[in-house]
Image (cartoon, rainbow, N blue to C red; front, top):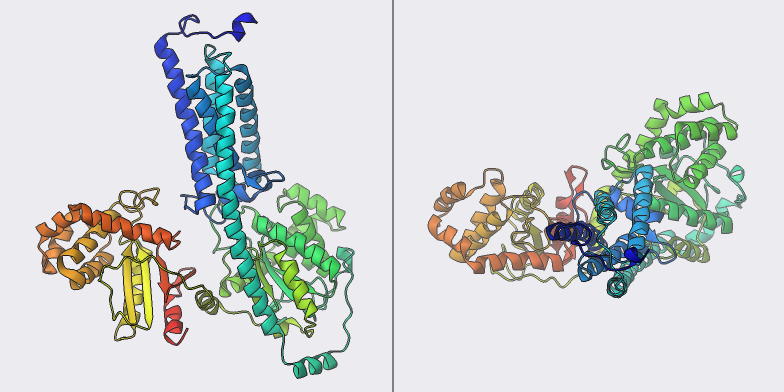
Amino acid sequence: MANRDRDVSPASMGQSAPAGRAVFVAGIVFLATCIAMSLMLALEHLAGIRLPGCGAGSPCAEASASVWGKVPYLGWPVSLLGLAYFLGLIAAWVASRGRLPVALRVLVRLGLLASVGFVVVMFQGGYVCPYCLVTHIANFAFWALIELATHARTTSRRPVTTFFATFVLATAILGVVDYRWRRAARAVAERQMQESGAAILAAAKPPEAEVQATNADAGPTTPVSAASASAVTSSAPVGTTSAARGFTGRYHLGPEEAAVRIVVFNDYLCNGCHLIELELRQLFEQHPDISISVKQWPGDVACNSYGVEGKHVNACAGARAAEAAGLLHGNNGFWQMHFWLFDHNGRFTTEELRAAAQEFGYDPDEAERVWQSDQTLQLVRADIEEGFALGVRSTPAIYINGIEFKGWSAPLALTRVVDKLLEANLPRWTAAHDRPLSAVESYIADWRNARVRDLPVPDRGWSWGPSDARLKIVVWGDYQQPNTALVDGIIREFLAGRTDAQYAFHAYPLSPQCNAAAKEEEYPFACRAALAAYAAGRLGGSNAYWKMHDWLLKNQPPFSDETLRAAAADMGLDPAALLAAMEDPATMTGVTEDAAAGQQAGLQHAPLMFINSKVIPRWLHGDKPMLRPILDAAAAGG
């Protein structure tokens, strides 16, 4: 026991000094890997930086949004806690030169158990985040290293003090940053909720005379008890489509005629949908006279051609199970299965579903046959196509009285808006009254309702069109990116013959060579192309810039210094002077300033577009661009 507690050198344990240094360096590498992966996940959360393979609906997002992705009671992302832990550990490792005391060795073993638990949860949950997985593998490697390196021990208290001091400091800093991020996100959600609620109230509240006439004609309605699924009613025949009854689902909680009619595009594996489901259940218990229906939008590509590969695997099976229950046992059967699916987080095996069917009084064989039938698939796909036509891209997508409700992530947002609508004593209508916006109308409305921003636009003097133009279009894009070329083509076609519009383009190369925000080399010639456009502008002014701009976007694949030389001569530019200007540090500075301005403007995905300083949040609907209708709407008066 005495030998275990005293400092032991590599030489006294029969270890050579080089071997000790190798262990020390290996520990640095393993911990640095953990820190790098945790830092990237933290930056995605705190700074909105896009990580390859992450984003909405990805395994990373699902892992982060799951109950395992948050620190209990605090709601703090586990990635931030992990980052603070690994920063503390590497500080202790360096301070002790690779000789950890028993207390920290125990901590590393506990960290290993946590990693094993998270890996099991990821694989069982179907959201294997690659960055998380690399972190846990590196953590396992570090544990193995200290267990095998028996000489790497010390009784000094310095490593323990260093660990906790670093961990506390890192946690405090990350906590402050996370608090500010959460406050900003809540403010955005709150604003969206207030704006959506006002729009719903304004659309649902007709003149007083019309209200009185409507209520007089309608007669009394009978509220439905919310005590259990068996109490829900619907006048719709089993299997009928919503098209015959207006904008509503096939099955209802509550009466079809109601002052508040809620429709939710739903995915049983969607974490946000689970939060909304819980809120809806409470709402219905309090207000059984509201109408609630759902439409299916599983993100699973097995039935949703607009889904994301690897997202919500098996969600289609859940949607089809709910529809099968509806076909077999009508409204009550649908909601019984709907509740069961959410209560099981949308995850189940065929055996578990058969057992549930038997518990609900179905013949399991018949239930499975209907579940797997083409009829359930067609019902789900019909909802998906309807959602796509409305511009739905993710779940939950919530509509109240036919108007999309945004800002649902604000605390009890849905409850607050419903309470306000009920207080307004609105008339009771059916879904035949509800007319949600089409996708193109929704995209235009997104731009129209955006707030005017003070754009950090560097003035190069190369804008197309008059400076006093009524319409001012600003774009950040990558000269090598196909979507940037598509957007530019639409804008240039729109500008043809117009004298009331101005167009400014700013380079946002998706390459770390000239863009600090780019984390990977998406396009090898992105920087060279951006430098070429900027250099042409420096040499020949606006005319030369736009000639080079057009050529670059029309010649993305064959771009090289050789093709550039030939094109420069055709434009009237000296090829040697152009290439020299591209090497000038001032040219690189101009490109990096443009990219930095794009980040300040809130760019997350190129291209980023503004009309009259209002961002265009969405412009691509599937593979169909919606930019021209937005431009036309802006030209018509916005």
